[in-house]
Amino acid sequence: MLQTKLAMQVDCCSIYITDDQTQQLNLMASEGLINNRQTQQFLKYGEGVVGLIHQKGEPLNLANISEHSHYKYLPGSQEDNFKSLLGTPIIHQRQVLGVLVAQQKTPRLFNELEESFLVTLAMHLASLLGNTGLRLQLGAYFQPTNVVSLQGAPASSGIAIAPAFVVKTNLTLEEVKITTTQSTSKEIELFDRMVEKCSNEFSGMALTLKEQLSKDAFALFDIYSHILNDKAFINAIYAKINQEQLNARQRYQSGSRWLYCSV
Figure (cartoon, rainbow, N blue to C red):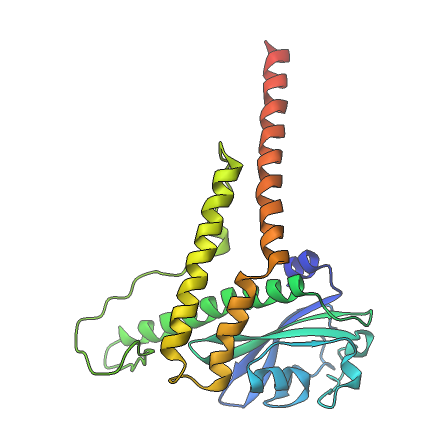
């Protein structure tokens, strides 16, 4: 939460995780909200703005949260210090696992780049949370006398029976290493091709699944397409690629001068 708060330059960042047994959204972590014995640690499904985001499965951007009809103060949290709110659902395989929230003391609407960043982060969290649940189920499967039923998402109609293999498809951000390149322009060209291919795949999937998904689930394709076509988001990545290359060049030149002086 602290890294997200610093990256977005907001005053508060929180994550709520669903609990289907108690029908609650539990406040699991926060940088900004007061967390003590007097602080309520949950919201009921459909309760407050966070509950509305969970219920609808759509992001919500508010300049002044207290003016919204679903606003509910979280007792003991001093949440009334924050005016604006940007929240997005954490969705994995059409199931809402939680809500990611960013808040600001100053009343304002969050811009498109901030929206894209938070939605992208929620997608990454969804993958982590979804795979964690799967690993727990598989761990139970290998215990004596235990039977676990796993339900997958169908890619097409019909029935198929075959051996199943669990592979590690999840890549964490910590595993991605920043490296240098001899040609920044070539890396940007590869990135553009990757974005275009990904966008085309989303468009194709949207056409295929349009009649099979609910309206709320299908709206996710619009969100992902928006991210891939967001010029501000893409330009920010271009700037990051160029800046990392510049930093690497400066480190190399500094090392060369130090080696020359040592000799």
